[in-house]
Image 1 (cartoon, rainbow, N blue to C red):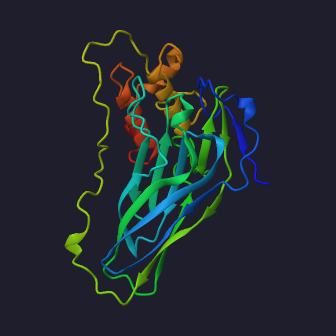
Image 2: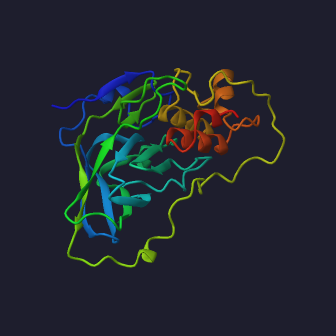
Image 3: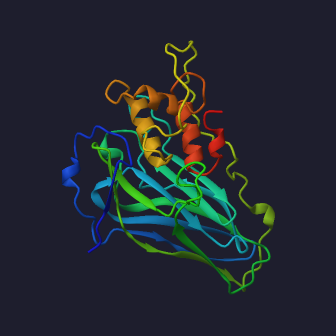
Length: 304
């Protein structure tokens, strides 16, 4: 039977009214993460999905993983959230977008971190989490196959460390600063290159590929002067003060932004959370921190 790995201290406190940490015991045997398969000729576009099946009843509110692929055969044009992800725009309070994705040569870095304490917005049940669209390269040989595999995001565990991340996270962040990381089964996906279809005009490739800069940055930054003095951070991005900068810190910061009175930060945590370094803690800091966790920017951009 597959069980969850309990990692104490990985995330900061969250107020969860509907689920207690003691209720989380084991992951469902059948919980799986599956990437679909597709066929396309050189020059043609393709669509893949990353589907989650039988998510444990406590749900998922944080994900941190990569998807490797053969860039010599295919080019990734866009990655979007699927129907399994709930619309969080109606959540009351300041809640930055929970999804960041970085498309690099050979790997897609994915980070998903909900800040709301309402479990109805968690990933639950069965459905499509991600939609992946791309194009088979014009010089891809017929009969070849580009494999898509879930992998850990290749970044330093601690900023400046030579130790790289080796963990894929599909997890549930609890109120007692304990993270449950589920251990699902994984099924690789693929794009098989056909040799009997004439390549289409490459100018038909999608034109809405994501830019380097996030498009959903919060626009509600305060216009008034800061009302408090925030100190210099000891390690920018380390909001939960565990020594690492990870998806757990994004969750901690988003929970604080949603309800600052119910989930206050210490002075040191506030200093580390001021990633934009403007003496104000808001959605801009969360957005910048998410960009780092999703490998869009370097750690040196935090607190710059």
